[in-house]
Image (cartoon, rainbow, N blue to C red; front, side, top):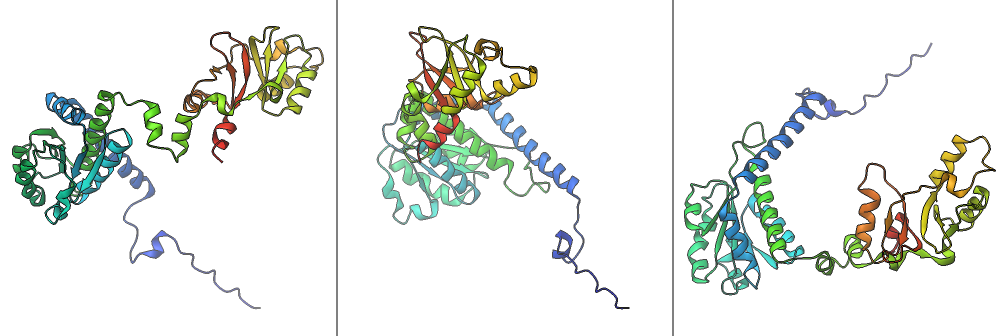
Length: 347
C-alpha cells in the first residue's frame, strides 16, 4: 500500500522569519489604534496652543503678493513638500527649498520679502540655522513650525508655531510620528487659514485642478449633464403604476418625476419605490403614482455645481443615486441627474 506524500509546507507569516512572530494579530491592532490615538491627541493639544503667533503667520503670508518658500530636511522635509502642495492647490504659490542645496545656487528661487516656513522637530537643524542670516539679507519673514520652542532656531525665527509633542506614537519614542503629524496639521491649518483670508472660492480651486474629477465637479454644473425633456420619465399623480413602470423602462434613468399640470414637482418614483410597492401590495394594478412616490425627494438646482450634487447624494446616512432637478424660482421640475452621470461625464 503506497503512502501519501506529506503535504507541502505553505508559506505563512511565521515561515518567512527565523523565529516566531513576536506578537499576535490582536496586539498589532492595539498598537495601531494606540498610535493613531496618540497622534490625534498630539494634534488636539497643538490646536489648543494656537495663539496670536498663528495670526501673525497668516498675516505675513496672506499680505504677501508673491510666493512662499517652505524648507526642512529629513522627515521634516517630507512634511514641507506636502505643505507646498497644500498651499499651491489652495491659491498660495509655494516652492520647496532643500536647505542643503540652498547655498549652492537654489536661493535664486527667492524674490525679496518672500516668507519662509521652516520645519524642524529639534529646532537645532544646522542646515536651517545656516540659512537664517542669508534669508535676513533677502528680507524674508521667518516662520518656524518647530517641535522644540526653546531651541536655538526658535530664538531666531520671527514667528514661532509650537509643534511640540509629549511623546512620539512610536512605542520606543524614537520615530518621528506624532511630531510629523502635528507639523503637518499645523501646516494645513496655516494654509487653510490663508485660503480663508484670501477668500479662495471653489471656482478658484477648480482652476488649479483642471485635470481631476474634483476639479471637473467644481467647474461643471448640473445643467451640463442632466437629463431633461423626453430623456426622462414623467408621470401625473393619477397615472397607474403600470404606466409609470413602462415609462421608466423606456427611459431607464432609475426614476420618474411625478409632476402637476404646471410641471411642478410633486414627488419622485425610484426603482426602490417600485420594489417596496411590490413587497407591500399583493396587487399593484389599482395603485396610482401618488400612492408610491416619495413625496419630499431631495432636489438640486440646475445651476448647482456637480460637486454639490455629489455631496447631496453621498453625504447622508442612506445614499441616493438620482436627484430631481428643480428650478428654484418657478419650482418647475426640469429633469433628473444620476450619480452615474457625474462620474461618467469626464470620460
